[in-house]
Length: 93
Image (cartoon, rainbow, N blue to C red; front, side, top):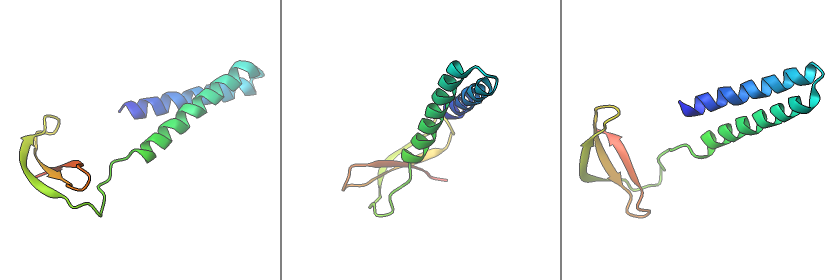
């Protein structure tokens, strides 16, 4: 949700900067355009770089740990990779 809001605000800043440049007000227009593009590229790179995907080579082992996820209300089981110590949460449904 926050990523979507930041993306829209950055796009609006870039658009406002472009419109200011076209209207003959270059100094603030370029600043808004550059700021909007930097934030927009940063959000897009962050969403690509830090997405969570399970590693296919991981040796996921189920643990005895289970709980109800407060956000979804579903039972969740914890999986563990002994090589890296990484934990993953998987819905039991």
